[in-house]
Image (tube, rainbow, N blue to C red; front, side, top):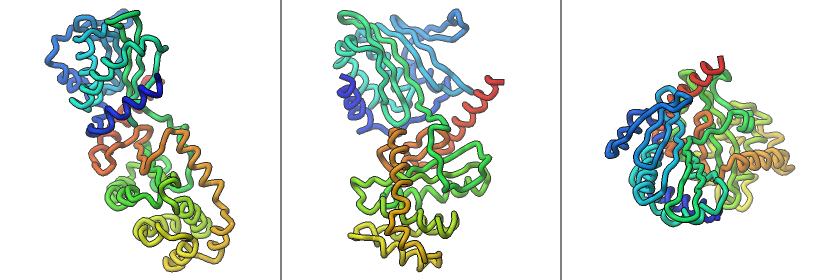
Length: 341
């Protein structure tokens, strides 16, 4: 049941939707529900709640931005329609998600009532928690929707960074040097990121995630760039990194790209004396394998996977997504710091 539900959610919500609007403000969220006559109140713990008919929900707000939604509903026809609308509004995905959730609830409530509480990733941003009770329709559903955030200490360390170590905003890219989309990130988005680095606003981290199943030379390229870095330092790493992307078509289909990687280092004026032996000996085989395992442990299986602090960026070609997520990460971090004082 769990596997089928996850596949259903992935198919329903990742095929036709646009990218999420992370962290809508409270007014925008409530405005999306303006077709409903919501009542409001304050519970015994002083938390604001909203209700309509047999539905009650709460919105967790940090720095005036919605981060989490929790609710309980009788899942009759009206309840299903409202909860689906609520999920669509809370995520910012709109009509496609609303329709997807209506179909999901109609098809799965009975099966869910026979399961324990479940946690289901909706996409790279949002996670849904749901528990359905009752012996027959209409069932009762308790649910939550929250923005997925990866803790800073869950990310692997990397030697390859740009910008101040003291920056409060960290942009992380998990990259495959043979990946065309990663090349596009490098060419179209990285100049924007570099501007933020130059302004002292962010630190950038490069993490290896070669997708060997579809890119035959990705692991070899990752090992080669580490060999280059060993003998040329971080400046050499970034010089070589840029040229690997610029010349990706020249080496991506080679049966054995090792000699090309050595020649490229020489062409760039980098130290090459031990690079060939380093590549041949697979000196960085374990390091790259470990990087792949750690990325997989984070649930990453595509490149580039880009994060602003702990929040994943979907459309990394749209720089407004970086601006919005940096605002969100800063606001949440500031409020968390104030709360802990």
